[in-house]
Image (cartoon, rainbow, N blue to C red; front, side, top):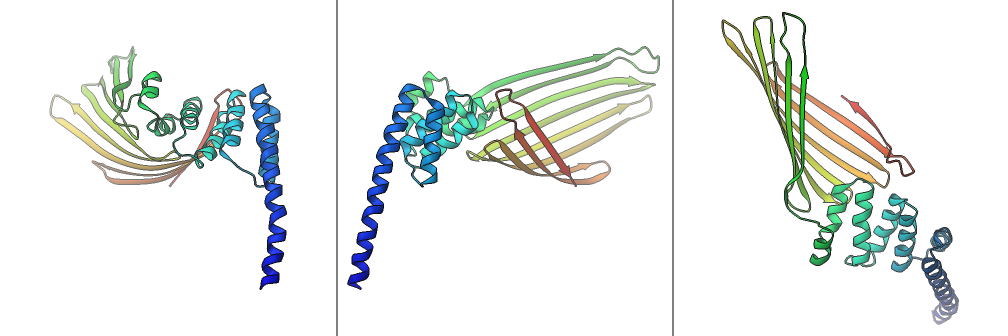
Length: 282
């Protein structure tokens, strides 16, 4: 047993000594490349460190900033998230993760990290946990009709997006459509709401509700066609890729209808913010 222990000590000492030398070399080179703004060399040395299983917070922060400076925000996010594993409250890491979320058009991701920032920094970045009116949109459509059997068509919709806190946001929309067809007056009112809950930086659970009330008036009677639809969706992201699973249930005058769908999307490389998405329904 003593011989085995002594042999292990003799073998392990050179290994740890080599790791210490590798750490000192990569730490020194990565810092030099970082200070000089040599982003390509910095990225290259980080890949060398990965090959020998060497990882530490400042290396991930430096290479994350290198990718950020080159405009590759998805890669920057990946490395800053690795840095966060070493220190979950590092302000520098959290700040750049917030920016990465913004630049990759992932507001829920950005706000998840922003909630951990110091209050003064959030004020300077104008980050609010609660905002009743974050976004307001309005739509109006008018279609002129030359037929004597149909009147002009009017459609109005107004929507509002609100932040309830750092993890919850809701979008609500009201719309109305009206037209006269022959001797029938057609009017359809709708309400839609979608609530998003950010469970983690890469997992979002959504719940939606859609109400429809179509009313047809004639000289004889009035008929209402009402519908209620519920939706639940789970979305997860992996760097440039995201996947979603959703289920819908509709109850209207003709009965119940259900639908399950899978979605997959990908952000294309480059700074054009191009996005591809595909869906499968059953």
